[in-house]
Length: 266
Image (tube, rainbow, N blue to C red; front, side):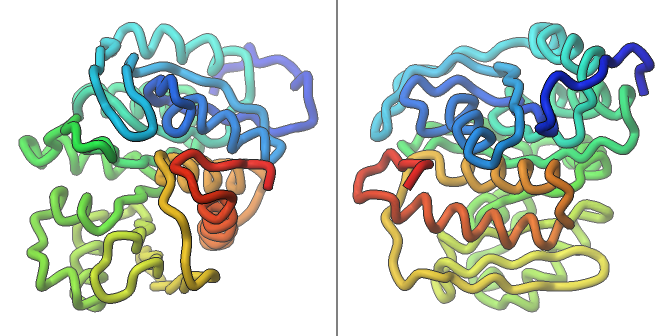
């Protein structure tokens, strides 16, 4: 850990979001900052991509290179005691691995939460993380939590759709696949148990049932959930409680209005 960090200037814990810039503020950095503020943690933002999109349409994406991302990140690590980092949209596995290594080199105890964004809700494909399984496994070794939905899980580990319907089979796949990294399997796309999330680590499997019978879909809901969990971890809660509190927060967010852009203050 760097010994050049200053005494915090706020009583809030510090976190970092490493993600893309969505001008609609529904997803990515701007959405994460809203979520952090709602949880009363101080969030820093490191940009990985400049997107042109709205809540319903994705038009263009320009990636920032590894060196640009690390250059933004390093001053925060030098100056502030960062407890937890959330990573969202990022160019490729090699860039992701370099960012994780940078974080761990500063503090081996830092907690990294990865929201694996492979496609935009409007249909744009960002990443193919199945092309190099060795690099992906190296990434998983460095993570504290990964938060895929069922469709992302199917892509990442090649589980067939029938296998995904059996939660015990999914649990076995997750634990074999993730190694030391915990998995929060989001249930929004599951055909049989929509809205039920499942938490897996080496020691336990938890089921988080939906607290609301119906919700209104939101652009960037996965970003909000992962950043809410990041904030809860920074506040000192356990991983399991952070996932539960994150689910409670995202349901409130989803029900804040009927549009695709949610309200964090409702």
